[in-house]
Every structure is written in structure tokens, then in C-alpha cells.
Amino acid sequence: MQQKNENWMAQWTCPPAEWRRFNRWLLARKGLKGLLLFIPRLLLSVRPAEVKIGLEEVYINKEYHLLRAPGLRLLQINIFEAGDMNIMELRGGGKHRGYCIRIPVPRGKLKEAVMLEYRFRQLYAL
Image (tube, rainbow, N blue to C red; front, side, top):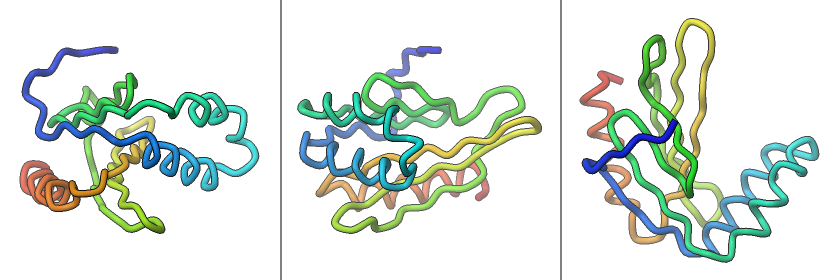
């Protein structure tokens, strides 16, 4: 479900090298069963990736992820180091399902990501 949101809290461009590194990291976490799903992402990671984060949704390189919807809410947000990059992780769920959205934090955007984490914690009482 694609929604137009002109009030993004953060908009980042992830350079191709960082986007490839992030996809390789995701692939390593998925193991062999995720290999077939990630081969296209690795091959297509020659362009910068666009990341937009809003209060209720996240847009990562043409993929929309809802943070809040009926029966679904954000439960946890963390930023952590993964080798030489930082990852923002949003976890949420509801009665019937859960989600985990991992977002690469481009170089030079860590301070903005930490401020965003703080804002989410205040707004969602996390």
C-alpha cells in the first residue's frame, strides 16, 4: 500500500557502496534460505537507495512498511553498530502478527538517527 507523505521526519540517501554493504549484512543474517530473495537486491544495488521515515510508515528504496495501522503498533526502536555501519531497527506488532524493519543509517546521519529514535520513544512512549 503506497501512501503519499509530505511530512517525513527523516529523508536519507544511502550511497551504493553502503546499500550493498547493508544488503550483504541482511543476507548474512538470513542465511542460505534468504539467498534467492536477496540476489536481485545485491545485483540492483548500483544506485543510491532512498530512505524516508515518517511517524506511521517507512519507505526504503521503493518498499513501503507500515509502523501503525489498525491492530498494529510500534513497540521498540534501537540503533546498533553492525561492523562499519549503523542500523536502525523498528519492531512492532499486534494481535496476529509482528514486524521488524531494519534501516541502514548512512554515514554522517547517526546524530539525526539518534534524534529520531528519541522522538519515536517520546511519541510512542517506548
